[in-house]
Amino acid sequence: MIDSKPWDWNKIDQASKNYWETPADEFLPILKRWKEKGFVSVLDLGSGTGRHSILLNDEDFDVEAFDLSSEGLEKLNGEIQKNNLKIKVRTGDML
Image (tube, rainbow, N blue to C red; front, side, top):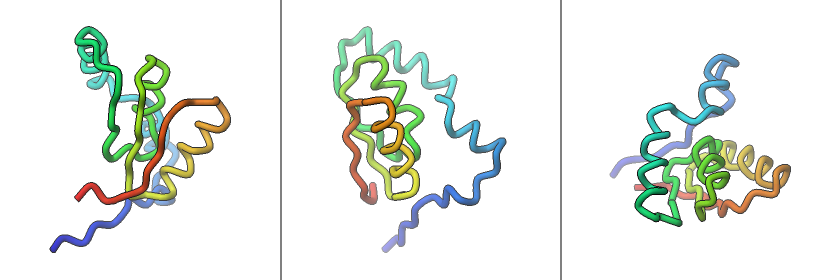
C-alpha cells in the first residue's frame, strides 16, 4: 500500500511560489480545446492552490478542485472568498 502525503506549501521559496500561482503555458491549448468541444465541468485533480481551477472558473467552467493538501486548499478557499469564485473544493487522496 502506498502512503500518500500532501505537498508542503511552507517549503516553497518565493520564486517557486510565483510559478505555482501562474497557470502553466502548456495548459492553455488544452483549455482552448475543451472550450471548442463544449466541455462545461472540470475536476482539477491535484489542484494544489488552484492556479488552473481559478483560470477554468474565469473561463466559465464548473470547477471542482480536489487535493490532499489542506494548506493548498485553504489558500484556494481564500481566493474563492475574496473573488467570489464558484469553485467547489474537496480534500482527499487521489489514490
